[in-house]
Length: 252
Ligand SMILES: Nc1ncnc2c1ncn2[C@@H]1O[C@H](COP(=O)(O)OP(=O)(O)OP(=O)(O)O)[C@@H](O)[C@H]1O
Ligand SMILES: [Mg+2]
Image (cartoon, rainbow, N blue to C red; front, top):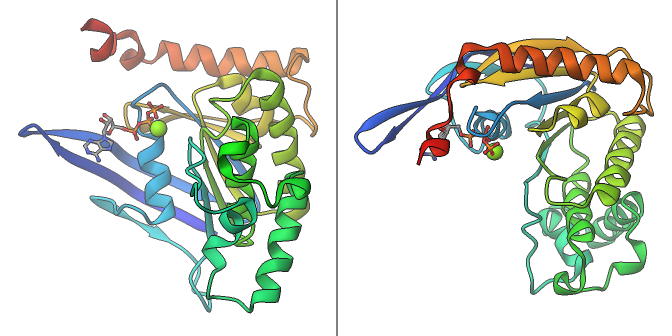
């Protein structure tokens, strides 16, 4: 459904050049769930931003099938980024404002809030929410667009372990019900194996490994099979020569 061909992205930084992405070839089948895993600075967010159309590649192209309208893409960032002056319902419906009749916007917001379990908080203000609830609002805000493509950038990284697990299960449930094409960015191999139909391993701007996770949902992260996948992926990521070098940040 979506195909990246030879995608690269360079940035000019301090007179030099940073190669954030290089030679990315990737097919995202319609309705698939792809987890993208790699250490800090390997280019995950850049790739997601290019997929979202928030940034253009320096090389390569994104191919999508010819269709009537533009692809509906929902994005969830690492932080909820809610508008503090709007209540939960206002935040969720913001992207639909002026695009749909008011009653339809209201119905979609109600359904999206229901999906993330926040119906009772529709009138709450962002300042009254916990971090996990705010992130659920951000997910509802993406879902309300009825996205064909759902892009998530470490959406649960800031959450406690209990909330994270609950949210992971919710996300899998939403994906199974609605079947958007999901790309989920994480630096947590366990989370990648728990969620992805396949896991793509990134290293220094490149995709260096791919693993199909052939485990049924809902998955048990403590199952020996899950553990085996985790070990395989980690071993590959750590064995890459680039991984052996300390990060510049670690030196200072
Ligand atoms: N707007 C920008 N200008 C200059 N360099 C950038 C820009 N955005 C990203 N980069 C560089 O591109 C590389 C990849 O960054 P990116 O944010 O994609 O990494 P990441 O894998 O998402 O890391 P993290 O896990 O820490 O979020 C980094 O070296 C970063 O410094
Ligand atoms: Mg990032």
